[in-house]
Length: 142
Length: 150
Image (tube, rainbow over all chains, first blue to last red; front, side, top):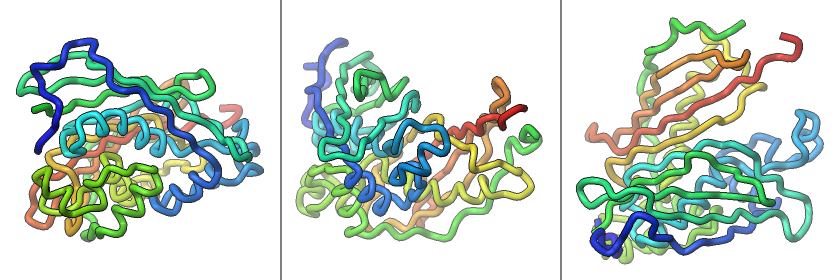
């Protein structure tokens, strides 16, 4: 595996380039098809509100997929991710309009580990609310 | 009825192999709008040391979620799936999933807890390739919200 980021050039606190990921209803329909998760809370407003949600919400796994892109775009090789976990704390609410919602993700190196690995802590928010908790990746650096 | 803690440790039979197709990886990468060439361009993946295109880090969930149906739909366990939300998710990788993999998942119930009337079920999916080599472990926590009035 060949990450382009060198362990020796990274410090605790090093920030990864932040990114914003737009998500519309069309995105969710496409993700439903690709992932096989057709739960109607992700595309049917009437169903979503009937189970107490404010509106259609994004798949948690979609948000998880977007958040780790801050890591994989940084190291280039997706195979450098050796561990990745999140807690789904708040839903990403996706209104039925052109703009949809935006998931904002920042990341920073939280710890330098053995074997030239680092732990990256990610923060993902949407509409000002934190949508993932304990969002952490362990990454193999060069 | 809370879930029976006696199910902790229950191991389900390995699933039939899921064959990971190059175009399936492309479809998934496009759905998450991820243009990393390692997902779609074999030469780019090879340049990074992979024998073929690799899948994005969360792709294994496509396979492990299908496998976990054995658990969530186990009539003996009796989970009310209409009340279930995804609590957390974690992957520990031995290597990335890649095109051509034939993957089998063995699901294990790691824990069953009751918190504030909610059932919290942790299921581990051990993913292995055709040779039996461990590829990735997926840890999933499902929370079944307490029924109204309970």
